[in-house]
Image (cartoon, rainbow, N blue to C red; front, side):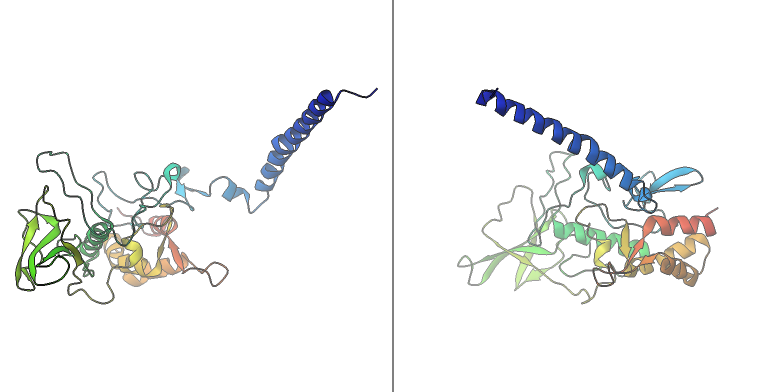
Length: 294
């Protein structure tokens, strides 16, 4: 007996639903679980967790901070690169800052609101981080287009004829009054500090390079976050920059610490993609095991 077309269509749809449920809802997940249990893959499937003394202390795949209760870097530990994922290294909020190279002007804090901290630009974040790393490691943390105080060296320059003509006014956009501007004069005009309610939209945004060295002592990965905000590695250059501090804090020689860095340096992916990196967590655990801080 030939079934009515509407009933045949419903039965076909029901059969397709049952087949897809079995294949995609049961068989496929079981196959993936079985593959994840294969030796060599099971550790990654479980999150590549790392234990020390029977306690899970982190993951080889996710970065973390090594700071004290006040957020200050612990001198005996290598520091990770900055993170823009949530409050830092949050795998549930993996992200970058989404700020680009033209983000150079800060939003100044409202002096009438003590809780308002303003919003630093990407340039000022990089400048502040470079200064902080330089101070921590005892090197020159200066960077092009950064002020000595660690904010973006950016002026709003006003011209007599709008965008051309003689300079009539210059304002340091990222230095709120009463801070003394990083530059005394610009093309013969005294540089002013910025006010929260000042209107500088008619001025030309002008970054000032300053006298920083062509190659900063502080590597780029020490002052910028990765695209995911979770990168567990730092560059070899940043690791070696920290070697003297860590060695002094642990009573080791710099050469001993550099050998530990070499042990935890991974090469380029497939031999040619990216740059060599150092897993910060594994390096710190190695040093804790071989030369704990007492």
